[in-house]
Length: 173
Length: 228
Image 1: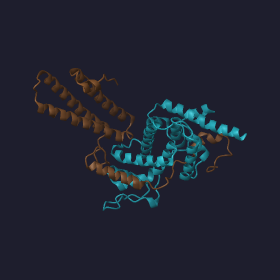
Image 2 (image 1 turned 90 degrees about the vertical axis):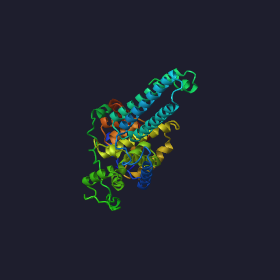
Image 3 (image 1 turned 135 degrees about the horizontal axis):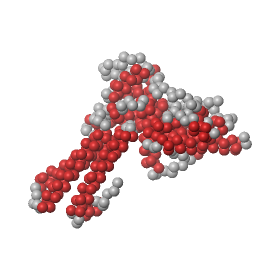
Image 4 (image 1 turned 30 degrees about the horizontal axis):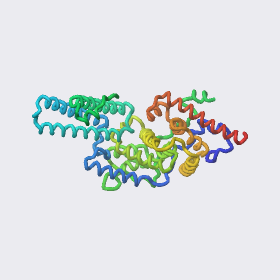
């Protein structure tokens, strides 16, 4: 009776064995490969220009969460350096502007690394086990938490700085 | 009756899990490396060894080898995508998305699960992500018109399917539908489904119980309407 509308069958038509007999393969309306191949080609071009995503040879051999963790450490270090400089500047208002700019650039660079690592992690997340996804997410959240706390400290140190004071409300995860 | 069905889990009523690797049609497969001066695969096309070799090549970035894997697996991915999305166009987009993501993540594929299971995992998770985004804009209910359009698409894509059952499954609410499709149709175990969906095994079992009850209920209602 397979292949008809099942109209003559009773309730037994919905039994699990009937569901188990349904086909597990289906034919798309057209060949999807040319579009997939086109997208893979685009990715490889993007990968070659140094973006975070690409084909298998574009640097995703390291698992996503490891990259995220590495970037997180860098980001944390950058934040800590920035805070240390901020403290020092408090005691010595005429601190080196070059040093401040260099540290600010370092924070920005590591922040970008962090975001790129998160993007890479997200890109492969669907293919990871629950454990790996959990570890990556925990690592990403821990870093974000650390960064937010540093920002909260900065806002307390500069209470009249509207951007810092406004954006750094106490963070809870 | 329901209890009996539940107690049979993992269900002996389930047909034996079909081979994960579908043999590609001869006219579809170009041996990896056949062009561009690369060394072609030595294995017999269509064999498990051939596909394993293609997987190894694809992991190294051989796009022709990846196409072999696509040809072998795309129908299984599309069947699941069609039942999850209940829309032919979205199912095709999802299938494309799955293979693009798989290509990207292939080096991280450790082989703990079979490639087919891994691709289905990506299918389910990509679908859930897209569905979550869509729910912000669209209602969760599917119209009868959309169900009919799905039925037409299902009949075209799977000529031997039972369209009445496909309709009944398509009417299931989100959550219950995914579990029933994965368990009763595609033959996955609750542990695997829980991993794919990111839920507890108990939740998957409860959803399956609910889904079967709803599907059975829809047939009972139809029988009453016919005066059976």
